[in-house]
Every structure is written in C-alpha cells, then in structure tokens.
Length: 274
Image (cartoon, rainbow, N blue to C red; front, top):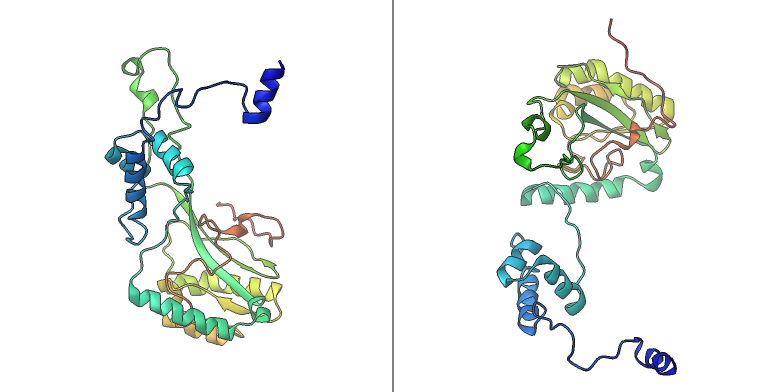
C-alpha cells in the first residue's frame, strides 16, 4: 500500500508502466501531425479555401476523432463557429463604411436614445423540422417500416405572416400585422403602416428620430416626402447603411425581431376576421 501511495505522489498514477508500453499512436504520428498542421495553416490567408474537418481527415487518411485530437492536443488549436453573412461587393462595402462614419458623427449617445428603429419580418407558421431529433424507432429494418412514417410533408408555399414593429431606448412599439396576400409597396406602407409607427414614436418619445432600412417601399420618393412632412427628424435613404441589419437593435443575431416579447409592449392584438 505504501508503494502505491508513493507511486501516485511521484507520478500522479497508480499504474506502473514501462516507457513505450501501451497502445501505439498510429493516427497521431509525427507525419500525420505535420500534414494536418500544413492543411489547417495553409487556409489562414486564403479566404474561401477552408476545408471541413471531414475533408481534412479524408485527405490525411485518418478518422475525424483522431484529427480533432491532433488539433487540440498536439497543435493546441481551438475551433470556432463560422457566422453566416451576406455577400456584398466592394462598392457596397465602401458605402457602408462612409455612411457609418457619417452617422457616428451625427448621432451622439443622447441622439441614439431618441432613435425609433423599425423593420418588417416574415414568420412562417409551419415549424421547422430537425431531422436529428425527429426520428422513427422500430424493431425491424428500415425497409419494413411504412413509407408514411419515414416521410415528412412540406408545403411548397408555406403559410406565413408579416409583422411590422419598432423599438427604442424608451420602450417597444406595437406589433402591426400586415394583411394576407398584401405586398408592401409605397402606397400600402404610407397609408397602413407609417401612421401607426409614427403613433408609436409619439407615445414613447417626445422627440424622436425615425429609422428604416433600404427596402424599396422605404426608399420611394413618396415615403421620403411623407416623412419630411410628418416627422421631426428621420434618417433618409441616403444616410442609412445598405445591406446592414446588424446596426438595427430591433433584429437579434438569429434574425428574429427582439420586440416579439409582449412584456412592456403597447398592446395591439391582431383583429379577428368576420
């Protein structure tokens, strides 16, 4: 017992092994480690050439588990999740930079608290299907299972509802549901949505700056003129960043409006149809 305790204090293990004993590391060899390091590091400065873990493992000739062991334990690397972003050209990139600099000079911290951010969002009524969780259990083989149990039906044109809303430092506006089969154009936006959004602004902020993105219905001349006459201040179509949902706090990282929660929201239930 003394020898076991002494061995544990000295080596950190109670197992007595000889140097070189145990299962040899076939996959985590020096050759494979060098090959994995070459494939991973060669992609750092070459955008669009990155390979997945499966592709690298197949090229080296080892399993994905061994590749992850090499990356973590031998190369001391960490894995990071990629973010899905929109493809934009260089001209749009420059326009975003120029307009963001102008907005940062125009809007102080106090001004930002007065901005009423707005947007529209489509919600599909059919819930998404997770194929990893929605599985079929059976005692027999797959060919013995009825095809109806293995198929998931999906409508070609799923039913959806569009919601328009706004949010500011002072609180959230109402949820405005767009009528079914209605396309939001300048006429509909002016007569049905804009007056309601402005009403929300006035109920939350004594002085406000109205914000909207660069959707065609928002940038129409009719809309810009209406805002000039009915708003104390607004960010016109030539000032807001193109293809940039991120600066709008109304939209979360998942693309879902954060104002959907009914807490602290001005109540506006959807009218029932007769």
